[in-house]
Length: 267
Length: 127
Image (tube, rainbow over the protein chains, first blue to last red):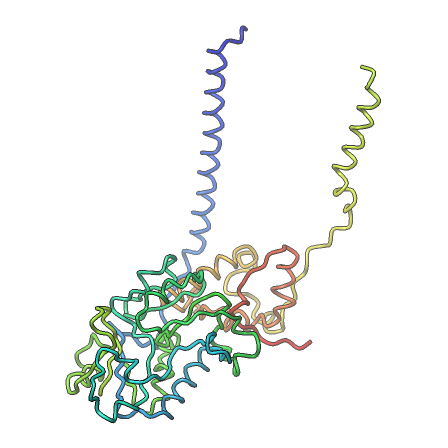
């Protein structure tokens, strides 16, 4: 047979088609494998724990009239111990989930020239506000930070790539970055075996104690607050937090930014 | 074709060098490691799934567990009427408290480096 351009092109065309269909077949069979392994796990189901606390929208009321420096320390201690938050000596490596600050820093737009004496020196406990419209969630490129249906803004540390966009997006400074290995230098004084640590290069923040709510417990800071922190369902008009908000004037941090925080302060 | 001997010698040398790793390591392959079970794991007879499944698919299972727990807040894994808390540190490591003998042995043999332990804690073992 004479090898001309026409026969060569025909042959090449058929060969490409043949190879293409081979890989197509390969793809079909491997899809089948995935489908069958999916079937084997179909008999297993996942569900929430029976004693889990649930809400339409979790929220917190902080009664600053009952707060003092000692309670702030206790809450910080309780939270940071429960979540294996490392205590680095250098300020620039600091990791914090809940901490105390001054009124003028917590509420910069509500700081008047002649502010009442009491508020001037009062320690204000601040934490992640679990905003209903969270800018950190919008900023996260990997969906490591996400909002649960019950309003908790959570982090999936497995997915965090440490880009720190969320830290730039958060107007409350609620997020900390692990510049150092949290396990190094004995930074975790008392390791809580029920909660994981983090690794170097991920961001972390308050999770409203999602792991404690799942087993029917109140958040660690609320337990340590001696009644100064009240945690409950903002979506339920009968809940304790809603009753408190009905009867008292409450403020929220940087409300004008439109993030709609779920943490209220009674002043 | 006066170079025939040279070519043949060259080919022999080439194949010798090319197959060197195979015959050098022949018979020296270390046998697959036997994982050691703790007394508690032995007494339980079966893990959350049968041994065959756990051997092949424990990584997929753990991946499912973490996604459901973290992202959907569904922390209970139910199978055959039994319920388990989907937790690596608290459920898996409760029975398999011998990480060095159980997890690491195979992972080292297969040269995989799962990063579970960068964050998740495991029981301290007596040396």
